[in-house]
Image 1: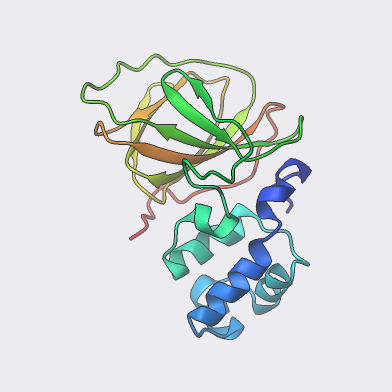
Image 2: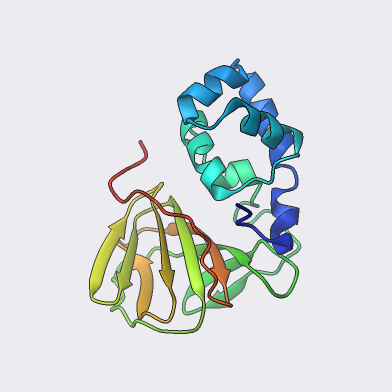
Amino acid sequence: MALVQDDIDEVLGAVGPRLRALRRHRGLTLAELATTTGVSESTLSRLESGQRRATLELLLPLARVYDVPLDDLVGAPRTGDPRIHLKPINRFGMTFVPLSRRPGGVHAFKMIIPARPEPLEPAPQTHDGFEWLYVLTGRLRLVLGDRDLTLPVGEAAEFDTSMPHWLGSADGGTVELLILFDPQGMRTHIHADPHRHSH
């Protein structure tokens, strides 16, 4: 299922060669990797050769096996990386680094919530669309309707943004997220297991 649309092809374009280099560096065969991740050998081979589009469903288990941040796999620029040509946007005291260039379709962002000595009082907002997020660093506090959740590194969430929601730091530290936002409200079909935690 193609989760990621044409507008973030630039981010995902080099995933295949990066995955192949990482597997070879670790001395793993495709068969060994298939056993560990539960992803078929043929799918992994096509992913590495660029014949299969990288999706978050495929990248999450690989990030866990290789024990590397998801943004390393997709080549998302690090905060402050001078090579990034997309201008960071500052809103609501947070920084959004766009990872996609084209208008329309799914928008990809790296979002940074800065550390604060005093926690902010949640002020939930609503807007049209659908959002998928993945915690890269820190501990995220997600207020969603009447639920108040804490998501550690490696956890993902998806929700309809017409539901009142608010994002902040759970412990006052910096939080970095990978966000896919679909203004049309089309679900991205990523379903994280809420009981599974990354090590």
